[in-house]
Amino acid sequence: MTNYDDVGLIELETPAITSVFPTLTLNPLLVTEEQLKVLSGYSNRRALRSWLDREGIRHMVGKGGRLGCTIRALDKIDEQQSNEIEFL
Image 1 (cartoon, rainbow, N blue to C red):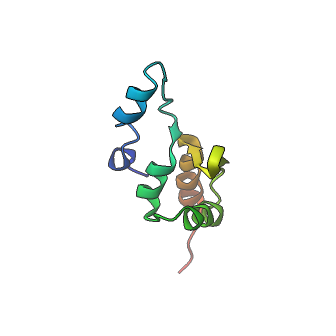
Image 2 (cartoon, rainbow, N blue to C red):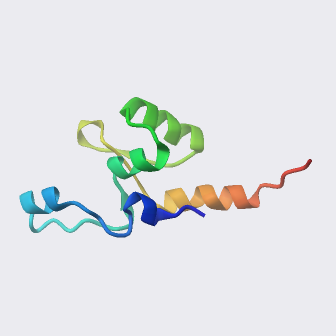
Image 3 (cartoon, rainbow, N blue to C red):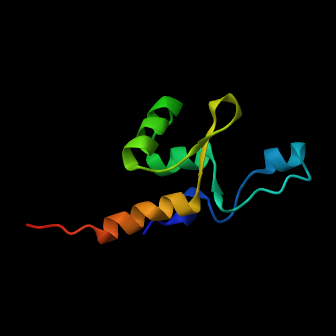
């Protein structure tokens, strides 16, 4: 199971965003590009998008090409991995 606390998905640390947009309410079920970069280990957007495609993670591309997905999309990876049977 993915530990989302390690990539800051539980407590969104976005003081810069909320100071610019004080009425903006961030959805804790959405995973930002920055959080995906931490989770995947890729810092390049193109490499990150390739990783998302390779892992079968449904994602969205926002304005300016920014990537994002949902917690549910990441959970599906854990479900797929736990349903796979490995024969030795």
